[in-house]
Length: 335
Image (cartoon, rainbow, N blue to C red; front, side, top):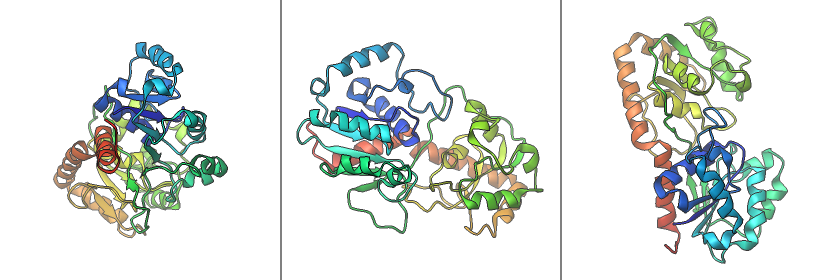
């Protein structure tokens, strides 16, 4: 299968994880980014903005040269609009007249809003979104924020984020009691941080109000290492339900206390077996923290089970395989 992957040149977690997974499963010759995305070839960004890096620098010039030959030379079997970003949609419109007639179209909506394409409205490019899809509707839509209590069309398939293991990562010994390092992009995060103030070692480890992503003291692989040093790491929704932290905490073998996600996650973690879910009103939040801080063996057994579950079901490679399985089952692909 040859996939033409219309992508944003900006970091997008779902887009980038899926591209890396497809590249590893199908090979570089079978997946072509448009425009050619330097972030997929060069270590220009630190984690988590490097998750699409899956190709070598020497292949960059060759891929740019092949891209100039046009779409007909590549002969894609599938075209993917890989994110709800303005430049992704503009890139698709620029090549849409060149696409083979009848080639299947798949749309990856990794945005924060629960409506299909909702981020186009949130980010003020709704008219561009309508220009793209008014004449050519996608055959399949893979969506990150599929609410559990909302009906979607039959061609909408849940696609949450995942964890991409990072070369060079190694966990640290546990030295923090409870951590919650987050931007207050939803009121529940502010509420949780208020409950944590004056408790455990939260003030000392930086689990405090007014954190900003760009000014985090823990960045790149160091962020993952520091997260792994948490006895308990907490997760709460942001603008959307799905967060990288939901996958990172089990991915670094830390124990997670989390709000239960309100989106569809196939093979999700199980409360009491892998993670501890607290009530949405946080009425049992600190009780959960107190219990699992005292019960180290139970906590570490669950963290180990969560790590295994993640590695069995929730890496970028699993998302790419899930994507390909659904495409092959639901669409007619020429090869």
